Amino acid sequence: MSLQIDFSTPSARAQFAAAATMRAERPSLIGMTREEMGRALVDAGVPERQVKMRVQQLWHWLYVRGVSDFAEMRNVSKDLRATLAERFTIARPEVVEEQISNDGTRKWLFRFPPRGAGRPVEIETVYIPEEGRGTLCISSQVGCTLTCSFCHTGTQKLVRNLTAEEILAQLLTARDRLGDFPESDTPNLSNKNGGAIVPAEGRKVSNIVMMGMGEPLYNFENVKKALLIASDGDGLSLSKRRITLSTSGVAPEIARTGEEIGVMLAISLHAVRDDLRDILVPINKKYPLRDLMDACRKYPGLSNARRITFEYVMLKDVNDTIADAKELVRLLRGIPAKINLIPFNPWPGTNYQCSDWEQIERFADYINEAGYASPIRTPRGRDILAACGQLKSESERMKKTERLALEAMMIAGHGEA
Image (cartoon, rainbow, N blue to C red; front, side, top):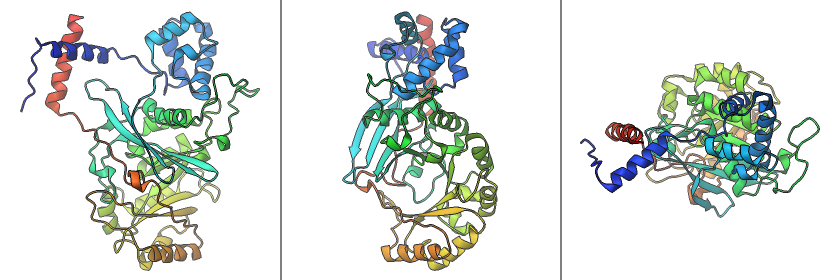
């Protein structure tokens, strides 16, 4: 069925205006590298001799102070602030919904504006407070292509990759909502070398994990840019040892992750035999266990101090026998590793059940006796569908007919302007 639009109606003309505005959308300074920000400032008319200083100022305001309005940048001239506001944005995404679990876990539904000929999209981000740390679970895609059979996100088709800005915006907005940026009048937020002095251990968000919606290594460049900014010592200043990227097993990109990003690595394993993993984690058909384990053994910087975390969801009568535990130990032999055992978190429509607690403990005991740390992850946020494997949004990919119609509207509206 084709999409019919009457361009003569007031509502259609309003759509024209919205489409034209969409086309002329201001780029965000958030997510730009310093080099990209410098070029953008030159294009905006900032003299080249001032660019380095201006980039340093903006970087401080965005990532140390956490401002989301150019008007708050007090050491930037009024004229330049006006120019920046006219040419760029640093606005946060819309917070559609915030849910707080009985255990203190928070889940936000964020809405991002359209990109080109598309619709606004929504993603979920989760904050997990624990003793001595606070972990933010960040999404990298809207939806997912991997269709892991036990994962709720896998039932939502991929809509698009998130940009570096949108990945960072989840961290910035979470820190806003948690009061995790310094007060506006807090002085001396830089050390003598220009770096931020707000220590990670003093923050509510002390750790981030790329374990939300999507497969991070299928959005490598945007994830890389965002995580390098998050770990920049003159800004958000999160240690790379407090950042974990979790992949379902995109083996060819694992070495690049270590070489170019240098964060901690987690593998969504969940099965120790190819035939079962083909069902639970279908990417295994492309990159089977032998290839995945080989890539893990070669991970740059791998050591006992920088172990790989293997995530293993406990599914009753599926992957939870002692025979599975024995094969897991054999599979990981020679890899400095920690094994996170994850009690399955149910979601509407699933056919899986969580393993009995006694069986999870027997499984953990065997792995511990073999010399591997195997903590059992305490389920968090189940009552708000914020636990591992439960995230999903309602965003859907725009149909081709709708996309073409919107593109036609944008062209027509731009022509009238």
